[in-house]
Structures are given as structure tokens and as C-alpha cells.
Amino acid sequence: MFARSALTRPFAAASRACLFYTTEAAPATPQLLLRIKADVKDAMRSRDKERLAVVKGILSDLTYLEKSPQAPEKVTDSVIQVLIQKSIKRRQESISNFAAAGRVEQAAQENKEIEMLKVYLPQAMTEQEIEEEVRRVVKEQGATGAKDMGKVMKELGGLDPARAPKKTVSDTVKRVLASL
View 1: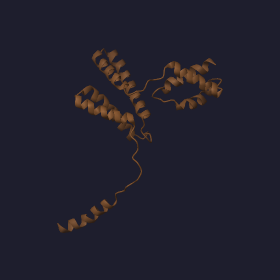
View 2: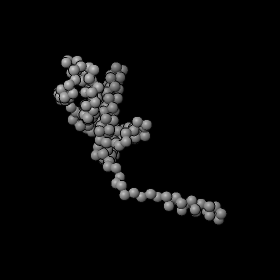
View 3: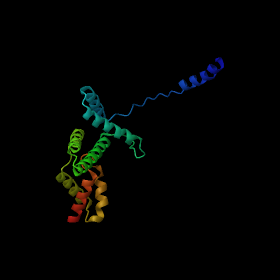
View 4: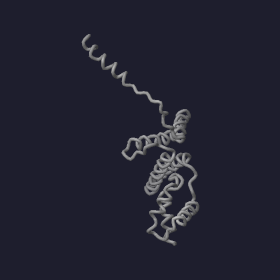
């Protein structure tokens, strides 16, 4: 027994000596993530199982994203909002499948979940606002046709994907360039 503790003691001391301290501040937590975590606590306190399941689903999706190979360097509010938009899109597909199968209750449940998720998204740009922005960029770039779509899309890359989905922007660019 004595010999065994003598062997483990140096390893224990070595593990304590390997603690690293830094003066760098911890990375800032996105405000939306803090809000979601607070909503988890509120849902638990109010025993609202539906809302709790939806909000925990967001956190689960975020954890999955962070561990995936395509994980962004830093999780920002924009990354979380795009994740929520994907979750809404999945639910909309489920609604159409449930409606086709005649399962009205499940479709209604998915609609409720979509409404719970929309609370976390910013006000989306309207089609008209997106088109105005596209026309401005087309004019700046001097784009003349579909061959200039890459230049225009590169310039529009600064648009927040949570406010202006890339697919909508792309479709608008195609339509505007086709009308030239």
C-alpha cells in the first residue's frame, strides 16, 4: 500500500503544477445566447414544457454546430440566428409533410414552435429593401448582365444573413441582372 501511494504522489504534484493562467479576457458571450439560456431557466421555472423543448433544441443545435468540422471560429448572434432560421425551415418542411399526411395536430404543434423561434430573429428585410440594395450595388459595380453576378454577390456578402437570406438575395440579383 505504501509503495502505491509513493508512486501516485509525484503524478498528483505534476498535474497541479501544469495549471496555466492567462491575463486574456474570456471571449464575449453573444447576447442572443445569454437570452436563450435565460429563457431556458424561465421555461423551467414556469414548467412550460413546449417552450423548454424548443429552446433546448436551439442550444442542442448550437452545440452540434460547435463540435462539427464546419464550426465557425467564433459564435456570434448572426451565427445563432442563421441556425434558428434553419430550424424554422426544417419545421416548415415538417408542416407540409404533416399536412399531406392529414396530421393536423402535429402541423399545429410545429406552427407553435415556429412562432416561439421567431422571437429570437431580427426583423427581416422586405423583398423591396433587398431589391433596392441589389440595384444600388449593381449600379456601383457597373454590372451589365448575368456574367457579373459573382461581383454583385461578393459585394452583397456583407448583408446579415439573418435579415436577408442568401437564397432570396441570390434570386433578386438574378432577376435584376436579367432585366438589364
